[in-house]
Image 1 (tube, rainbow, N blue to C red):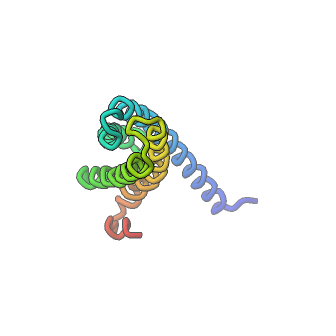
Image 2: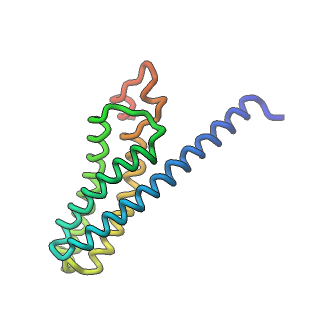
Image 3: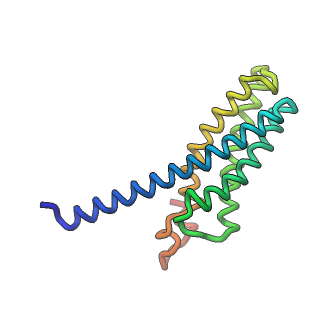
Amino acid sequence: MTSLRDTGLRAYLRGSWRILLKEVSAFGLVGAVAFAIDLGIFALLQKHGALKANCVSTVVSTAFAYVGNRHLSFSHRARTSIGRETAFFFGINFVALIFSELVIALFVYGFGYGHASSTVFVVKVVTIGVGTLFRFWAYKRFVFLHPDKVSAPDADLDIELAE
């Protein structure tokens, strides 16, 4: 026999997995398009300097990703102020951009690969992959909050984010 508590737990877990699957799949779709935008622009501009190309391609793909993630991946999550949400979103992406710039600079200036080399292009792809894992975690944790965390009468976002 299953108790009422076990049934509720199963329903909760089933619902949680369904939401996580929606978030991951939509995040993947938005990410795939942003990835194509990022790499396309990077490939076009790479001959003018890998670091400049990386910065421009990242900013353009990040703007696309914000709209896609807000309205598709995390549309079911609570809305906080647009200023807070965009500041955290672009701040997180700025951290990922700095990481990418440092790694690309290491390969261009430290290891002597040319700005337009295929190795630098591969490094760009790898930094996008590492940044994607960081961004998914950070978006869920800091940007697109769970509705229960925001709508609770005693919700204090500063304390919630500090946990």
